[in-house]
Length: 637
View 1 (cartoon, rainbow, N blue to C red):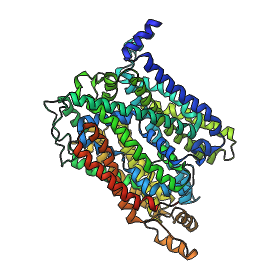
View 2 (cartoon, rainbow, N blue to C red; view 1 turned 120 degrees about the vertical axis):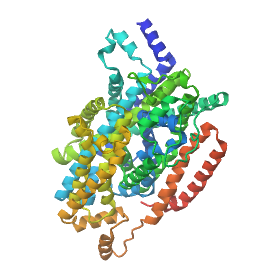
View 3 (tube, rainbow, N blue to C red; view 1 turned 30 degrees about the vertical axis):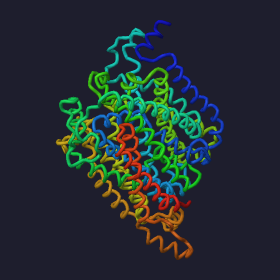
View 4 (cartoon, rainbow, N blue to C red; view 1 turned 120 degrees about the horizontal axis):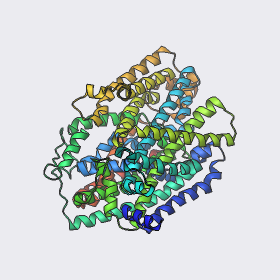
């Protein structure tokens, strides 16, 4: 057995110190869960929202940790390697600047509702009518589809990450198995299943409270790891040239992507063709339009929304969302750029083969395996494993919230005891994990799942959830039919492919790369969803007047609410709606500029481009000062 242990260490390039660090982290998360388990189980809100007693900065760190996931980091390293400074725009697919919309006004609006989930929020907007019940049901279904997709996304990324550190050949030799028992393309899925079992235990144990404290530990580990990787990269740049194509160092772009890797690393040119980003101007226009609409719709019903609802007050909800950008992007991009630099300088040393094919998503784990020193490798692996666990735990907590609060307590047993609520939280968590693993088995790669989540599902969510905030006449039936038709249109291409082998997206957009076609399909989703919204709204009467007045007085939104505003003023002449559309839009634009500058700061720092760094610092300082005056000083509950 001792000799096997040595083989294990040799193949994984890990030492006893590295393994001890990883084990210590895993033990620490279990201890956190056990210590806080009793406190989390006091009642429903304690388990799902931490009793609304957690400080905003801890929730912000936790939210940032949840976004510091393995799958996303692998993808960001890959696009940073290929596209250079142009890669700062591509994450707008999510869109990353949705945090600015949340910071400026949407977190305040959402938290004022004082609910537990996005499903429960529906009652504050549409009341208790048949339309409200239909709306509630469709948003719960959407939320569960969304979190299952996110869990499958993280599950695949984790498997790809682990694969390079634990060679499949070692596992088959250790247990005397036939190496071909699992097809090579499914090896990451097997690793994902194994580590998901560990993460499930911690995620279910202590609810929101243990998640937040475990995320704090994870953030500290990732910060140390990021600094270490950044320093290694800067030292490598001092002693070694980094050969990249013209335009790689510039965030500027034209209609076409003018980055030619021919003669440098020819395989990268093929990667650009497969990604489909070559008509970059067209891609950017579609991405920006979709991103603005998605951000204006508010947070999707996942861990981000749950963290906002867990804050103590609306003002703290806004502060939490703003804090996410400040603590996430500098640390994350310090690490991402560090790995990009190491991979470019020492490209020939990387092993990027996964499942028999060249896979640029393997840059991150391969670079760790090759360049991170003893001891620090254990810290790095513990940090990235914890990043998976953080994302997984927060997403799973959101799924439990919807199943417990919006299905079990609403329809099955409204007066359930705390013990029954605890049991349904546990069982729903286990079932959710099992289903997400099954979904993950059918996904080809991280980018495929990413596109389904950010384009097909969010595309279905956008129109209904824009109208619910900004248009008083929009009712529950409109919401239901808009969401239902959008989900149908969004998932139709994947259903046709799975059931009949007919690729609708290829038929409609043969000129674009497969993984990016869904982005150009979005206008179709929007139109179908909008037709559902309008038809459903005018097929039924408006939401009852009292519900609308209560919503308007509590949330105080801007938009097309004059009809209700006049009725509220008639009842209460002293009422003042302190929302300000022009100020909020100014702050959104300025906040997005500052957020992008924060991303560029870490990149230019690692690349040691001091002049560009100075310009970025000036943008951050001036923009931050203005936001202090126009946003922070204006915040109210």
